[in-house]
Length: 116
Length: 111
Image (cartoon, each protein chain N blue to C red):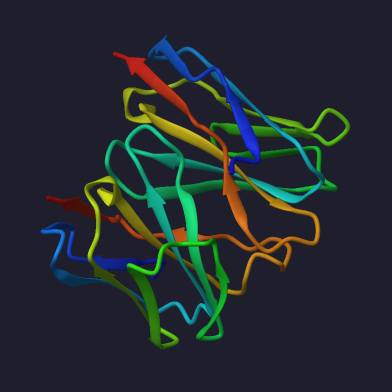
C-alpha cells in the first residue's frame, strides 16, 4: 500500500471561515509534507514534519497552521485565508526525511482549495 | 524558490515518438528525482537518480545525470497518449533535506 489519502478533495471557504485539510498514510513513514501548487506552476514546499515534529516551515503565513497528531496523520488548519491562497494543496510522505539519500516521496491526490 | 529549470516548457509529439526533456539545476545535489502529474492530480514518482549515478532505466523511461553540467534528462521512448502529463524534475541539495521542484514540462502525446 503506497497510498497517501487526502480529504476533502475540494473545499470552498470564505475568508472568515476556519477549515482543515486532512492527510493520512499507513506506510509507516516518519516524514510528512505539505506542498502548495498554483495552476501551471511546480509544487512549493510549505512544511515538513519528521518524527511528528515540525522540522521545516518555509516562512508560511500563520493563517496556515499544520498539526501532526500522530505518525499517520497530518492536518493543515486554515483560518482567515485570502483569495490568492486558492490552490491545490498536496500532502506527501516518505520513509525518512529527505536528508537521507534515496528517499522517495509519495504524494496524495491533493485538496483543491478555493477561497471566496 | 526553484532549484531546477526545465526545457522545453511544453512538448507536443505523435504517439510512438520519443520525448526528451531536460532539467538544469544550480547547486550540488544529493539526488534528482522525476515525477509525473496528470492534470489536476497528485504527483507520481518515476525515477530517482543519485549524484554518483549517471544513468537509470525504468521501463520506457531513461534518465541521465551529468553533475559536471548540473543537468539531467528524461527520455520517454515509444510514447503513448497516456503519457500526456506534466513532468517535473526535483532535487535534494547535497547535505539538504528538502525536495525542490523545477518548473515542469507539459507533454502532449497525440494519438
